[in-house]
Amino acid sequence: MPTIVLLALVGLAAQLVDGSLGMAYGVTSTTLLLAIGTNPAAASATVHLAEIGTTLASGVSHWKFGNVDWKVVLRIGVPGAIGAFAGATVLSNLSTDAAKPVMSLILLALGLYLLIRFTLKGLRTDRQHLPLRKRFLAPLGLVAGFVDATGGGGWGPVGTPALLASGRLEPRKVVGSIDTSEFLVALAASLGFLFALGSQGIDFTWVVALLIGGLIAAPIAAWLVRKVPGRVLGSAVGGVIVLTNTRTILRSDWVGVGDTPTEGIVLGIIALIWAAAVTWSVRAYRQDLAAGRGDVAAHGGAAPTPATAATDGTATSTADDANDLVAADKNARPGA
Picture 1 (tube, rainbow, N blue to C red):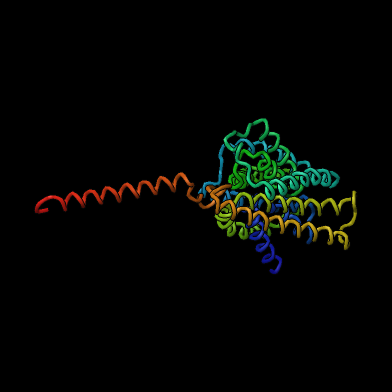
Picture 2 (picture 1 turned 135 degrees about the horizontal axis):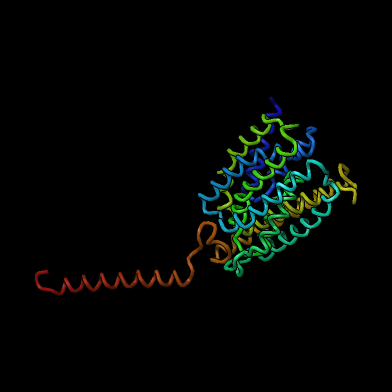
């Protein structure tokens, strides 16, 4: 029973983070399952079965809050489903541990770019009018889907930073579209695992526990992503990517300092830098809010621009003058 409660709490926390930042449900849940002795294929299968429900609930919630670009969902989700089915089939017969450090290194570079870009320069808006092309989304979805199924998580860590780095979609729609398209990925991966493994090693009670926690958190996360400014969201996502992938590299055969004081010191330093970056982004956003700049309009409404204020002032002044003239005219008429 304690394990079931713990899994439900993990599912809730993981979905809250995933729905707000566009990543972490699979990685968090799979890590816990591996820690309690589940084999990699069964752990990934369990998480993806739970994700069928959580991603559906998350997608509906994001859609209701206006966080979804359906063209992006289809263009990245269908190739992602193909990659996920292939990845599930491969994982059922092969370990991909050797590829994890290479993928983590790529993701670490993307995370550093996002952390620096959003912290120092804020949200890029000069390219948001440009469409995301199929030749970019299709290969991205294929790779992200394959990584997600073989690693037990990876759709968000691969897809979210790539879309954010493109600068062609505002952060809340990146998160919403990635979360919504993950339903196709989770469904395809689950089918792949069931065809290859059957129900071997899958505890459906654990699936239900993860699902319940995720269903509770999904609407909260979809609401939260609308309230978090894009600049702050970008810094937060970048920090998650840098921290998690640095940890993977430190524990790989390349470095081999997992579970040592060195690992704790390195991750602690990164966490402090991350916290400072998010704090800086919050302060910068508040300055932009006061000046009517930045991505304020996408998160709570922009402050009135000087032109708007001037127009409002002119309209008020004109109305007052008209009322004065009417009053004067009535006073001037005999018997009025």
